[in-house]
Image (tube, rainbow, N blue to C red; front, top):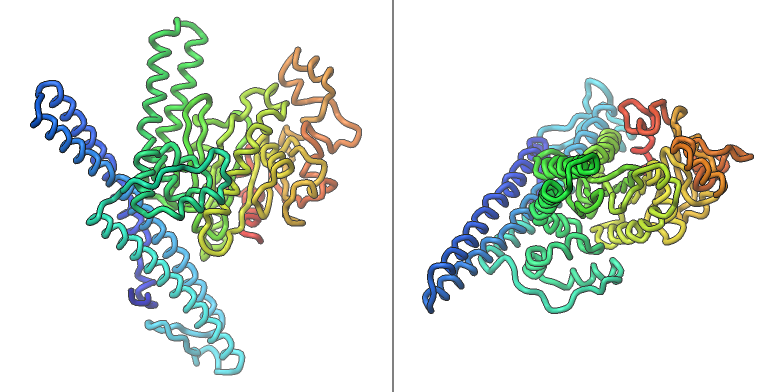
Length: 530
């Protein structure tokens, strides 16, 4: 491919590429419809025709069905390629704008070909303007080089897809799969040893394995989990039907039906975000509708980003309100884009654990302890699959999610450059030094009107007595002697914890992401490393 020129980059339309990718992904629905139609035709054929000719026809229909089904991962892959190109062009155009602004501030002009010159009406050539000219020229080259690299990467990946269309989308991989306890690094090595056609075969035939296997690249996990969306929704519909058919009418049935309806609504809202052409593209890294529902979604591709945020929500989090939690991650990401438009950031909603639903559950560290191995593996996987120089990884926990993050860091280790705790009831540690991240990279904030400040420790007998009266009493707890101990250890928002505290405005326990709250700006700056 030729180098990208100055005028070419200015004229580039990232949104157009993103829309084109979404259009390719939109073909997966019609393709699945055709696949199901062929399956139905084969079934009818078998019911009314027998003999050698019938067997041959059935075999042929099965082959056509498999060939057509094998196209679906490639359609999603085309969307990913064009979305990645769009994101890279957005960052390159932002760098180009920064270079032009730098030129203007120095009294320089950039001509239509990208040449840098002194504007004699504003300044006279000096040694200083010569240095400024060199800086602007270097910034322009950086932007154009980034755009050129994006163009070449997209062209190479699309060329591979085109070749696969002629030779076959998918082919069976060698026998053997990673052991259940294999590390993400081992999984990554196994995946790297497969051909693109073998990977597509696994995505198509074993999506449940690929979709939740830490160490498999984000793009492949997204393809696999998108193929499972329909069956996951069918599971919820079947659960609702069982309740309607078998559970006697009454308050219990009504509560359970409302819970299923809420999960269905959450899944449908999530699916709408996944299929939209909005920026940044969403990647589905995990989905389980059972129980309260678990989900892992990334906004932007963490494997390609310069900065990655993993957000762990707290009490009552589930599939029903996953779109709202994803909105919180999106607001941090939007602020990152405003502060550093030339950098590529991604944000992950990590809800791969059973969050407490009630206060008596939230008063126990059990669910956080159970979640810790999964969060540890997920972050290790992000390190293993990232392409290029390592990204800055930040893990943020809110409310009970801060305990999940803290216990993971303390008991298992966490592949993170920074930890952030907001609205925390304690993180399972006595001081920041126990969490294993670089000095100065443990951050915390608490709103002045956040009720979590009242979550004081109680002894076991006192806790049992309080729980026997009212759940609210458990929140209030008993004040400790120092005033800095919460349910799960020293308050991370206290200077004595040894971390760094950033400011939050008023907004209660969930207002940290509100527009205008300084905490939102603080979280974004931490993600960016500022």
